[in-house]
Image (cartoon, rainbow over the protein chains, first blue to last red):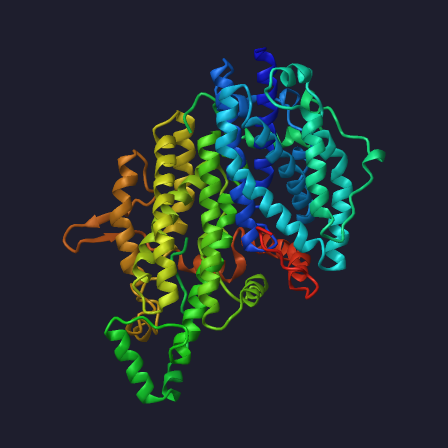
Length: 251
Length: 328
């Protein structure tokens, strides 16, 4: 198996989770109700833990250690989708992003747990049980709020419209796409996207929200190749603020 | 994280005079026998009032206390610290949730308590009106403020009100982990590079005066605690807590080669008591009444969070909202 292809996939998985975990953690102390502070913090801890698991696999393939990889790269070296780096905004945007992201993440984990590349299969099998709860959390809240007050429905609809081009950007193909599919690592981004659409549609149909017409939306690609919005670098600078005081120190 | 300082505002103690003497006698007898008072049991109004005030202040201290350390979650250096810092601050928010529920059993709603917090009507632990300038400040809070909180909360866990005392037992178990985490982080700083040592000493210097006021004014200065102690609402005096804290932690601070910024701090071997420079109680009063370095900022953050989240709470209360079971 082409090691570059595997590394590319691992970076994509790890970076998505690190950056979204970081964003989720920003809700600690600011949630609309205490229970949501706590929920977003739990998901943040899981996501960052998952990213560490994938950075550790990368280290086994000869990359630098997880702390160095996570805390010292610049934005153009990150492979996350642009969706996860966008600021939290209001709770409606964070919730919609969480819904769109985790419904895709669980499919990736389900596929990867069957992967021909055993180290990924093992990690994905272990972690998908946690992602299942993230999906339950997102779907429950979307169903609850998505059919409540006019105000809530308007907010969620507007965030859904805003997030959708970025969500479609999650499925940007890697330059090793066909190789990964042929080698049975996973079924590829098109397959993830098709299943994702089915699942999010099923949830949205239970609410007063409408899925925007995907045919008219231009996906925000680039993230997988190091092209990011202006929001990622400041996030990384903040994350590394203490670490960079002395990267050789034991903190 | 809560030290219990200055909880009990002066109360008219004739209030108990209006209570039914037979019921009051039975109530006091139950407490003397070590029984717990439960939400539906008879209790004097004064007991209810002081407990609401105490538990509410404790809950507020947890959510406001999440803010100074919370600002360091996104900046924690390395995976190990990042994960631990997140979990630690999340615990504090979880404590607030537990405590608001305990206070609600006495008849005041969470929404009302949060409204009183934002309006400035109810207080929270004074230490959180001081800023956490650096990562090292956050470490000092995790270690020494949590240590102080444990001293106070272990005592209060033996108090007479069932829901509060049970909540405190759970909280103390978690705080014990925070203490280990905080100590570990401080050890790494104190035994690290010269820059790290300088950072941690500077943070200790900044936090020492607030730490010394954490347990509240000297007992010589507080009045009306006798009834509250008989009712097992207040379980240890402020001075006892402070002495116990100094006994447990000053040696540990010295062990790390750090200095305590008080030239008068020493243990008097004859009396067994620690002697120290009297904290600036005027400043303490000024800060608790709103004039500290961070009072306005802390409340503004809380107010913004409440305002920004109001639409979610309205939506949840909407009769049209369909309750969805998570597994449906």
